[in-house]
Length: 110
Length: 121
View 1 (cartoon, rainbow over the protein chains, first blue to last red):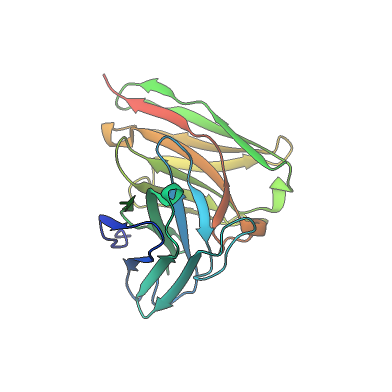
View 2 (cartoon, rainbow over the protein chains, first blue to last red):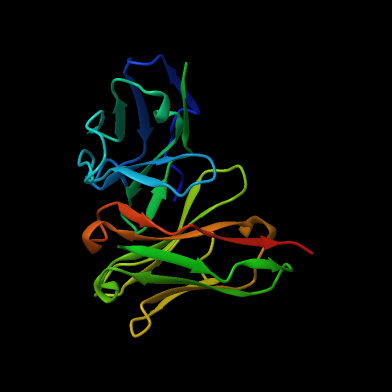
């Protein structure tokens, strides 16, 4: 159950697009389309932004999109806004029936 | 309104035990997949344990296997996490969460506010 690999930080200017990568293995991301992404602001509970690789829950802005290729999933935030500044975590179902999170990516809006 | 409310955290000595509770409301708790996720101070999220839904299979992270036990009382709409043989590295905020539409393979869309466990002598 090794953690998925995410970049520690990503930054962008308002209005720009950024992409956060999440690399796993053939035992998790590579074998299942059960990848989800969470946004967490300081002191708050996580918020689901994407599930099943690319599905957005009701109420989540369409500026957020997800994709997957091989063992790597990605979250793209387009039209970056100040309110998007937060920590983002990917998560994947694994072949052992468990879930695993990434180490988290701090998004900074310049 | 769908809601999860955790309780039961506190300060405990190494080797001690606690039972964390998560009271659910606003959805059919008995059939939903549920999970516990923790976050150590200043660290990332760590998945801890889960029920898969009405089938009620349970899974645990390797780091807690044999020490933690997940259970639920359907009559009380409450999820539990019994945490035994606590170590300093178990210090964290513990969140309970439910899965989208109760399906274990979707993401976790409803989260509680968390309950804090501190393991220290």
